[in-house]
Length: 131
Image (tube, rainbow, N blue to C red):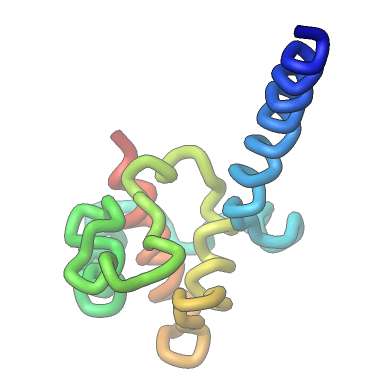
């Protein structure tokens, strides 16, 4: 009986310790200075529309048309593309811009394909997905 209680406590402690580690290991944050950058492109309907067109061209195959991580290519990717509609409003503009520019793993870097103002337009569109 004592052995069973010890095993139960060890299992519970292991779960408590490792679940947050596993969840946080999948988090991806830009360096602090990059995340703190403000979007230099004024936020207006034109910027969001430009961003939407870029999103459809460069991002929707993985992230889906509405940014929910359900694009036609998403099922084949590991890790799965982020649900940007959920993340919108919870990450600063600079964080999104840095991720778009630099990429990681299967997420390509777009800094050599898109002008900086286009990246910021994309950020305006992504932030507009906030639910």
